Image 1 (tube, one colour):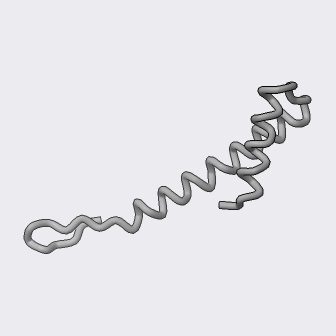
Image 2 (image 1 turned 180 degrees about the vertical axis):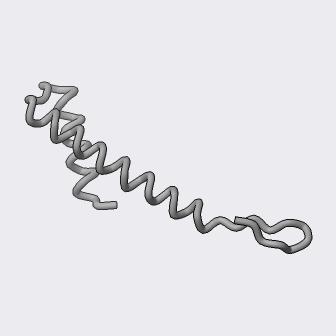
Image 3 (image 1 turned 120 degrees about the vertical axis):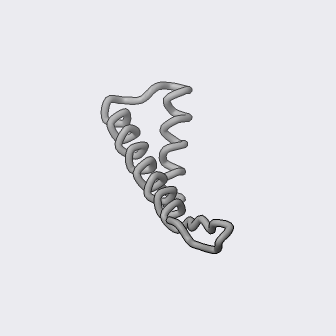
Length: 62
């Protein structure tokens, strides 16, 4: 995950709480959040895809 992406998301969130966002900044925030969620979901999916369940009879199931 890109630290700059998270940093910018947090920066916009702080600004939204303090003074509000312009329409352009709101669009940027929405796009950044969507990008973050996409990366997060892909990461979780990769982790889940690597999980193997081993039964008592030592057979592997995915």
